[in-house]
Length: 377
Image (cartoon, rainbow, N blue to C red):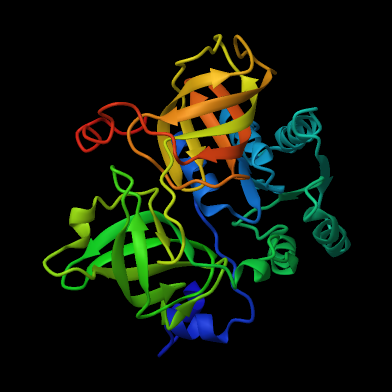
C-alpha cells in the first residue's frame, strides 16, 4: 500500500478496489501501562487471529505471557512473529525460540509450536491454524527481508475464521468502540457490525444511555476501509456519520460513549445491570468474595462491576464458579453466550455469560450519578 500511494494518481480507494483480498491489522499496545486498552481491543473487535510480536534480542517478557494469555482465554488462534533476528546473536535467537516453544506448550496454552522455515511449512500451518491447536512461529527481519515472504504468504492464505452469513438476515446490531467529531461534518461512530446490514439512510436506535434508554438516530453516510460505501455488511468494521432524528436534539446530548450499540428499531432494547456467568479464575493473589469489584471486558463494554452472589464462599486461583455480576455505573447491552475477561490488579479470570437479567433494577442512585461518577479503571 505505501508504494501504491506513492504512484502517480493512486490513492487508498484505488488500492482497495484493485485488491483481491483485504486484511485488517489492529495495532494494540504492548506496554503494561496500556494492558486495559489491549484487552478492550481484543474483546471489542473480536479478531479472527492474534499475532504476538516478540523481539529476538529481548526474548519472552512478562507482557508476552500476558498477551498470549488473553488470546488463549478468548479462544483466538495465535501466531508468533519473532522480529529483529538480524540484531540477535545466534545463541540469543535460539534461546528466544526455545522460550517461546516452552511457553506455548504449557498446560494453560496447549499449543503445538511450529517454526516456519519454508513454503511447505506455510501451507501445512495454514490448513491446521484455524482450529487453534497449532501456533506458527516466524523469525523475520525487516532489514534483511528474512522470512518476510513466508509471513506474507501465510497471511494471504488465512481464511476468515467466523461465518457471518447466518447473521446477515438478522436485525441490525452494531458495536461502538470509538466515536469522534469531524469539524464541519458531524458526529462519527466506529465499530463492528455483528448482525444485519446497514445502508445509508437507515434509522437505528442508539443506546443504552445512563438510564438504559435508547434514542433514534439516522445514518447519513458509511465508510469501510476508509472508502465511502452504500452499505456495511455483517462482520465488517466501519464508521457511520449519524445525526439525531428528533428536532433540536444533538447526538452529543445523548450521552454517546464507547460500549454503546446501534440496534434495529424493531429489536427489543437491551439494557442490563446484572447478569450471570460461569467463570474460571486464572490467577489471583487475593481471595474474592461477594462485593468484590473487578473491571469487566465483554464485547465492546469495559466497566467496573461487583459480585452480587456466587455458588461458592470464595474464589481463588483455579476456582470455577457461577457468579452474578452487577455493573456499578450504568446498564449495558450484553448478550448470553458472550465471552468476558475480568481483572483487578494482577487478578484475572475468564467466563461465559449464561443469563442476562434485564428486568433486575440497578443499584440505587447509580443512573442519577452516572454522568459524574468515575469511569472504569
